[in-house]
Amino acid sequence: MGVEIDSKSWYNNQKDEINELVFLSGNLFHYSSPCPGYEINQDSSAYVNIDNKTGFLMVADGMGGHAKGDLASKTALSTLSSQLKKYHDTKPVCEIILDSIDKINEKITKSDDMGGTTLTICEFSKNYVRFFNIGDSFGLVMNSKGVFRFRTIDDSITGYGVESGLITEEKALVHEESNVITNALGFGDYRVEVSCKQKVEKGDVILISTDGLSANLTTEVITGEISSGESENRLASLVNLARTQMMDESAKIRNPDDLTCFLYVVN
Image (tube, rainbow, N blue to C red; front, top):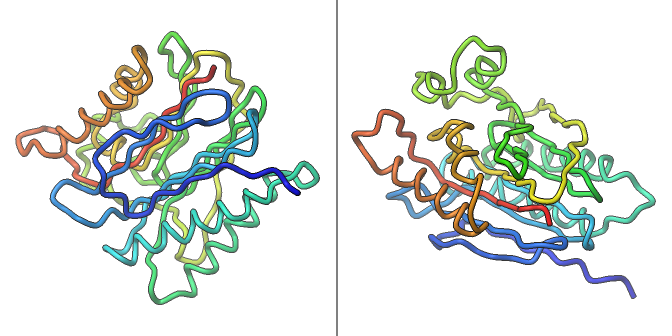
């Protein structure tokens, strides 16, 4: 009899609350809610915990409006979770993920009932993490002293501008094309940005999120909010800041959106 794999998924989540979960050898914190004023949450999220060293966190941001986007993100994560729960050491995990993404893209592209979706995956294995990214959902790693070490690059016009130094994050957040992405699943061609393996140590913080955070807060603000304090309070503070900004009509930076994120502190 095989070992039971721990996993959980959230589709069209409506609860405005932080969930505390057991993941790997520590605690994981999760949040997901729809855009202020809307009932449909097009984000999906999931985790798969293989054992105390190997696990996966995933977020997907559906596009195409209401049910189309919600269904696309749900299809992506339900398919991927199903494949990862079959994980075993005889097949490279990178191969499992890339094969699954190819199947997801084909399934969504051929459907008339689904829009597109972004996808960000964080793979945990022993003493490293690795990110797989499509679109402008993102992942980052910060050390125990609050120093930002790694962030995925947003597949968007402004994301490339920020990465190349042509535009600041502050200007990118108010740019007229800030919501234009250049890569997603469900539109035929796509590419997967696979990061190098990022070594992690005790106290390091891993955050993955849909762009509900990054469309409203700079990386500096995000890392500042999660740099200290109890893990649950860190995520609550970050979410509250982003949501308050979304609802403040006088805010200089204001991009209301669904918001979904995971925060994990390495033990």
